[in-house]
Length: 425
Image (cartoon, rainbow, N blue to C red; front, side, top):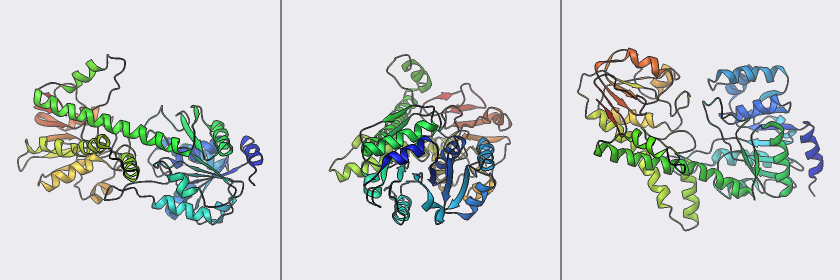
């Protein structure tokens, strides 16, 4: 029989040893936060290089504030990094799983990392311990993968919610949804997260509600971005400025703003809908709205590339400014700008890529040419980093055509600005 009272008291008194498995954009901030709140935390990774870097206080995510916080929790003795194969994994009382759940080349869910974690945990005596899945998955996945890996343990699903690059929406203050396999598991998860979070801790009815809530959050975004992208295309044909339309629509209380652009990137919005489509197919259902929204958003790099090709002539200097999926972050995962650049390359456009947050080595690894901040004939906004406000002055002359994939410019610069659903000339 399980005994939750002992573990509950250990959580309340911060005497549990917590293992965070997977130290990326989700795991590192969570591990640091737990350690700052005086829990003893071991972070587990598969790479020796990453383990060594973390133990030296280097987060490898290029977020300076993380390095400062990381060094503090290392110095306090509350955090250390180890390999997943280490016996330290067996000494933990709580396991929080934060490994990637991407899609493969065929747009199908890839749960290989999650299954590897389950296999490793199945080799441990989990009696009286708590397993928490923060990795994003479709309903029934947490139960299927982690529901029978041992005896007499507790199981919770609390899908991660992060906003990379945001100084206001942090791990500590974002509301947390928690579902448990039973009431005892749920109570343990709620008490643990309440110890570290300023944001609301929200109990839901079961693992599957928590999983589906995450799916809905990101699919909602995908569908609404697809809608505004389609409106932007119509605005282009009508000669209407889509930004004026959005500003007008925002005056109605029930309208939630979304903005058109070169495409959707990151580890969530363009990925999670494929998990829900797979679940729907297994249940004999075809989610056409979701399917069409993915198609619409995935076509946007091609749509913006066509604007470049309409203005390009061989011999022109072309610069793509920004290649990460989101402004002010160094994250290249699922970046639509990379897809866009490959379209330009396929159409024999000679261009360079400049991104202050991405090294020249990374750009070359993607098989693109490193660009420079200098006057060009075509200036393309791939990602609207804050530095663009000043950097564009070095690149745009009076005859420069600006292809604004993020609708960054609000007034005309250069010869003309061709945005997504708007033209300034």
